[in-house]
Amino acid sequence: MAQEALLKVFRDLEQFEVASEASFRNWVALIVEREIGMLDRRRTAQKRGGGKVRRFGDFALSGTLSGALGSDPPTPSEVVTKREVEDQMEQAILQLKPHQRELIIQRYVCEMSYAEIARSIGLDESTVRGSCRVAEKRLGALLAGASRAPG
Image 1 (cartoon, rainbow, N blue to C red):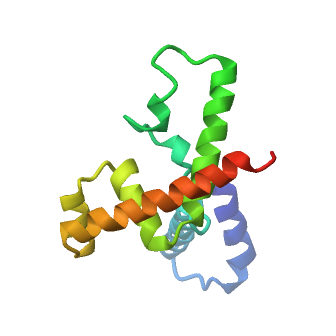
Image 2: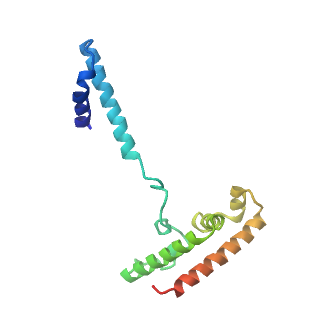
Image 3: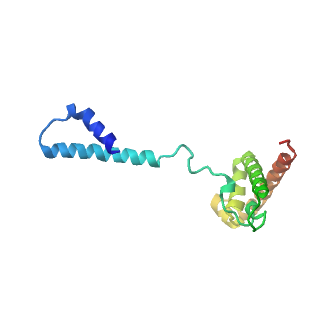
C-alpha cells in the first residue's frame, strides 16, 4: 500500500503546485489516505453473492441431515455419504419454486415454527402449514428422483 501511494505521488508530482512544505505533506497524506480507503474496499469487497451463497451442509443443523449419521466421529465413508446426501438435498431444494424453497429453509434450516413463518411472510398459520406440506412433498419427490438417477 505504501509503495502504491508513493508511486502515485511520483507519477502525479508534476501536477502538484508547490505552495509550502506543509501543503506537500498534506497532498501526500491525502494520496495515502485514498490508497488506504481503496485497499480496504478491495479487501472487503466480495463478488456478487460472495459470503451469501453457502452450501446447506455448511450450516450446523440440529435434528436434520447433519445429525443423521450419529454422534461418534464419522468414518471417511460416512463423511462421503453425508456429503452426497447433502449435495442431493441442496440440488433438490434449488429445484423448488422460490416460495417453497423459502418455506423449507425457514422451517428446517432456521428451525422456525409455523407461527414464526406466518408472521415473517404475512400469511395465516394454517396456510403456512399447508404450503409447507406441499413443499415437503415436492422436495420428497425430487429426492426420490435423485436417488433413482444414475450417478
